[in-house]
Length: 144
Image 1: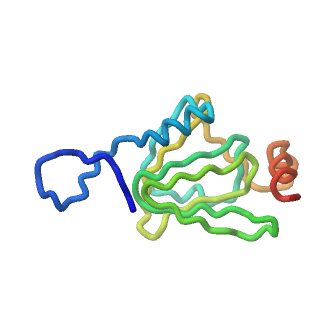
Image 2: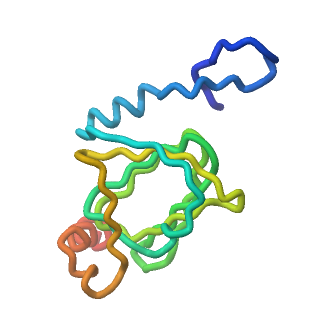
C-alpha cells in the first residue's frame, strides 16, 4: 500500500498524480532527532560503493528510484538492504556500509543533517577501526 498527496492537476485520472509533497513523518522524525538541515540529491552514484563509515548518524529518505545499502553484520558479512521510493533508513554512526543504485542507475534521495550539511566518509582501514565512533558502535551493537 502506498499513500501520498494527490497533485490535483488536470489530465488523465489514471496517472499516479503524486504531488511530491513532503510527508509529515519525515519532518517529525527530523524534529525528534534534532536534524536542522536537509538536502535532496539525484545522481548516478558509483563513488559511494567504497566501504566506509561516518561519525554521524546517516538518514536517507528515498523519493524515487532504487538502491542498496550494504551493511556489515557481527560476522563481518554483507547484508543487503533494498530501498525504494518512500523508504527511509537510519544508519548509526560507526557502522561500515556502502551504497549503490540498482541496475537502473537512478535514485533521488533526501539526506537529513543535524547541523550544517557535511558528508565525510571514512574508508575502512586500521586507522578507522580504532575511531571512537566505530568503537562505540562495536561495543553497543556487535558485542551484544
